[in-house]
Image 1 (spheres, rainbow, N blue to C red):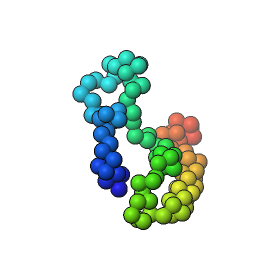
Image 2: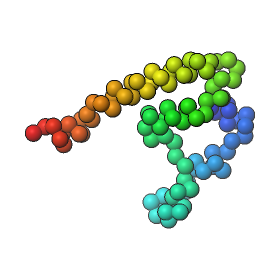
Image 3: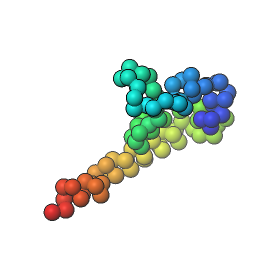
Image 4: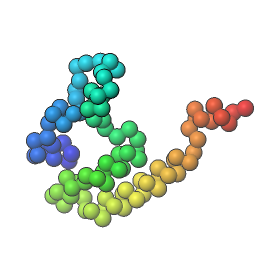
Length: 97
């Protein structure tokens, strides 16, 4: 549905700052790097992005606002549980004596 929304509203990802980039991103100046937009880097960020912009999901009655609210609530609870469990790398560094 996000793709259809992009087509309908003529959203150009390149003009919006999402790339693709044909340059070495690591050699860009700090100012140029700050212009580059990225997708969410974590599930928390993805949920935040959904909460900020979900109108396209309501079109056509495919999803209701209440369904999205419930889904976000449940996913936040899942993320909270997962974030309380040490990552295997953390376990290896700090708990495995």
